[in-house]
Image 1 (tube, rainbow over the protein chains, first blue to last red):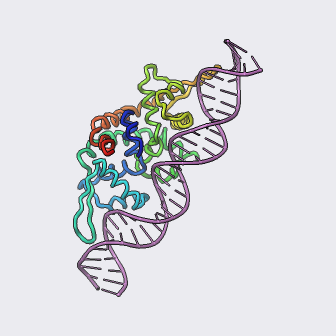
Image 2 (image 1 turned 30 degrees about the vertical axis):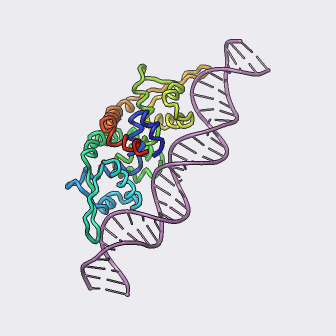
Image 3 (image 1 turned 90 degrees about the vertical axis):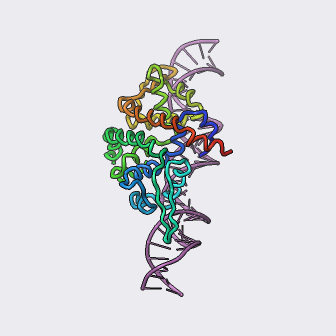
Length: 119
Length: 119
DNA sequence: TTCCATAGTTACCAAAAAGTTAGAATTGCT
DNA sequence: AGCAATTCTAACTTTTTGGTAACTATGGAA
């Protein structure tokens, strides 16, 4: 997350990658998209992505909220309840993201199996 | 680049991100796509992406070749000449990638200016 | 003979990202 | 008093990524 002035002049790809190209962001967006109700609580997301630590999930959600892709709704209860959902901007990213997912599924053999078979 | 068995079971997003979500891969693909002839030499790419070091460019190209997104053609000359181009698989990724670029352009204000103005 | 160009590689170091573990905060329940 | 539930945060460590600068190979040209 550095050098924004340089990126301002550079390609939009750089902007996307540097902000959402981390290990978990796109996966979180996808989970929210797939959810029936459109919302998920912190622990629900965590269960869906159990290999993501609480810390990383929290960090990822904060980042997505900062960039206005995810909305965070806090209910003043004890124990706390926080619901996450996609914003309109977040929703607008989904077609592109799903397109990437489709590509990955179609080219699974070219790209993924290659690494697994190697062992 | 680890833990492929886990990823095999996981979401295709993970597969894409873990392989091409680095700082330079998508940018290289985009440059090859934009090229008139469809091919670019090492130094040509380097000039287009001058803030990418030789080492990183070399590494990135090697990775993209490994995953069959980029074709590497060596001409046995001195000084050496090596031409890079997109494979069919590489070309097939472009619509999704361009869709992401469009999204970034459309949501520039929501996402990018935010960081720049902050200073 | 020394230099040039091209396409890299290598060794070393710094920075960033991610993981682990522990614990904070709240309040009702037992 | 002690515990449970939920959503985090802090301190620390490890892993991964990226950057710099110097070096290699080749054969023709000056």
